[in-house]
Length: 424
Image (tube, rainbow, N blue to C red; front, top):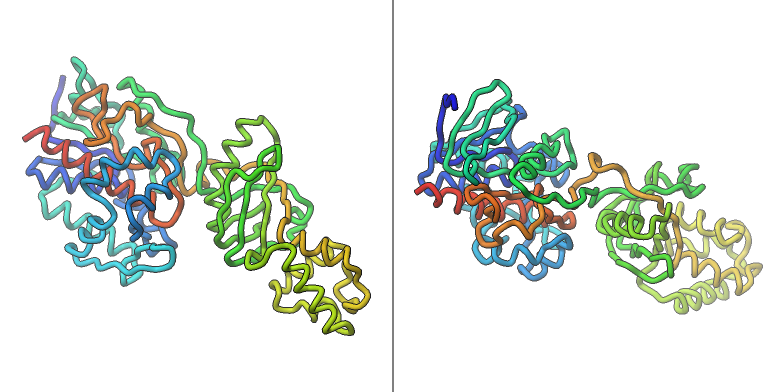
């Protein structure tokens, strides 16, 4: 074997998991090499949270695990060693104080994702870590049941005592997450569970979507429910949504998306029903009473004026049309049947969705390296003792809101800690 360089620990992938892994390994006094095929580190961090970087979430560990529906329970051992509160303290020590926003989301106080990335890269450099940018790993070499070296695209071979793969999933490939690590994991004998998009906008062929009738309309604090073929709820989320030119997006929709993917795969159907409650504050029955009371008290007013403020005007006009109610007609001319129909449409509006945007357009990758083959306490491969995995390459995924970055930073921390210990 032609060796041109050697290190104690090699980390492949310069995203949040890889950066944290590199830092943790270097803190054990290991000689660490961090390899990134792109021209900069932390690119996914720089675009997260709208460029502000939702670093973690302040909720309890149990709540965080609930918000990681993709094998979140696997993380109990990881969080016992380094959890969200440890992440907050970690950045405080690096002079990046965090602030809490809605739903427990934690952002840097200066609202700059670059502050997070700069802090991580400076910490790694301060620990004498070596970084190779614009460097592509072509292969990982194995001998006698262990990883022994990597081979770069230029044929250079670099040896090490431990290896950490933190190459991300298949989502957002423009940040460098193009799924390279899956191939190396398979070479090591690992199982890759089926990959699919999660935290991804939904597609719909409904006429009003095709006509762009509601494109750009945002609704706050509505309930999105995904129904199975029998009309029973699979999952519900109460958050914001937005209508797009291809379907629906927004936090509530993104959180439901993985269940749409799974149900469509399970039933082999072309579409599934999304039920939208645009007025969660009241039941259907109470809403009917409210509208009838308004109608009675404002009998000579037009429907659109009488109901003004009940819903955003654009949505109200759309749903009035859907219920065959003339928006300009006086309330006195609308019969009870139509009021009941309008209430049903407001509370239980059924929209057919037929899939999601592709994986490369998703925020998060579902599926990945089977967690059955990973030691939960150390993030080491159960098949190759000096090979470690962390971050989105694993079959672990959460909702947006800081949960995926929490999983990436925590698994990276633990992978780096034990990969470093392995060589000392």
